[in-house]
Image 1 (cartoon, rainbow, N blue to C red):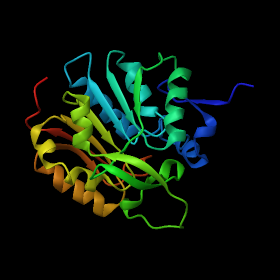
Image 2 (image 1 turned 135 degrees about the horizontal axis):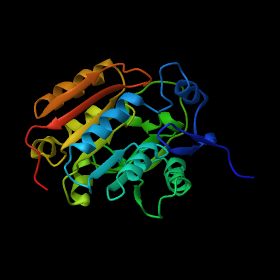
Image 3 (image 1 turned 90 degrees about the horizontal axis):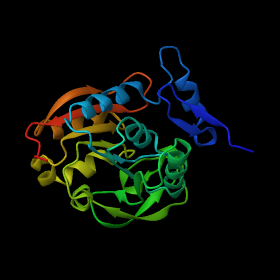
Amino acid sequence: MTPETYRFANGVTLFRHMLLDVQLARYQEPGNPNLHEPEEEAWLERLLERCGTDEPIFIDIGAGVGYYSILVKQRHPLARVLAIEPLSAHADAIVAHAALNGLDDGAIEVRTNAISSHAGMSEFVPLHYGSHLKSAGKTGRPGATINVPTITLADLMADVGAAADVVKLDIQGSELEVLAAVPDLLASGRIRSLIVGTHGPALFEGVRTLLAARYDLLHADPAPAFQPDGLIVACHRSPAPR
């Protein structure tokens, strides 16, 4: 039997069993055009249009089951797309969803490191879409953790070997810690633009203040419609050349 699928208004199709009931309900709320996060998606497309190239580099950190990675690859077939996702079930789902959406094998580069303030091994709390590094400081019911390899954002960019046109950062509470650990990278302009999902008011303000030193803030909303997290969109004032 073929697994049941869910198709978004933009054409991205995911296996329904990989989506939560609360997400499915949100997609059908009045005013939501059946998109995962309408405001974030609109800004992602605007940033990619501003790149001035048919071959942008998009890095999807905290890629989940691949929604944004697949969307970018469908709309920009020549883009280099890297999906960073330490939860193995989600990393496997990215590969399965890429095939489901007609993408060639390897069209999306999937990497299973967690992005952290340091390189090594760290405890990771596997909670489906709420999965996070234990260092994120979240509270809640105790549960089993797993160990995952971690690298810094600077390590990742060094491995990519080129400036990134858009980096999406959605890492469930570690966003400020990760960005604060790489001041030289942020100063360099090698991340030309950022889309950051922020998990709580304090993190929203911290990320906004940190990025404002080097980036123009195009959009900053602590509670965008149809999105469970805050949203900050920023472009570097002096981006690195291609």
